[in-house]
Length: 151
Image 1 (cartoon, rainbow, N blue to C red):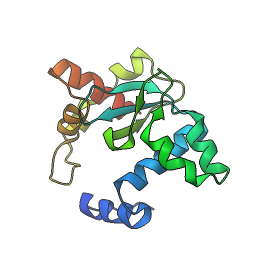
Image 2 (image 1 turned 30 degrees about the vertical axis):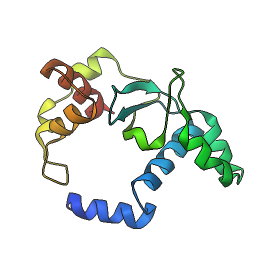
Image 3 (image 1 turned 45 degrees about the vertical axis):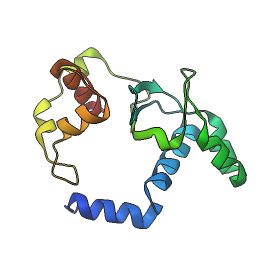
């Protein structure tokens, strides 16, 4: 059974469960670190990185009770493409399918889904993708929106 809730109620529930945004990001990064699932990571001040995996170090530290190492690891999160980031730089984490996408899958995405209001200020999914992925054109926005919807 599904239940419709407002974006504000969803945020409230997430904060009750994870404490804050950093807690939710840490949880998501840990899951991705242990599963090896690829993800897109967007940043406040730089272009996103796509289809990367989070280093197993974070998941291992949390699984083996080495919580005192976690703050250090979150200051320099390692990704499979060789890049690193401090957790405070991360805007969004968008898990992607392990098997990736075919061009046919991306082409078949209904972009009208991007016009749904989903943000806490009533922004559409398209506007949020355009902002978080730092898109410079409608074509670029469509590409990232297709990836996000298909995921």
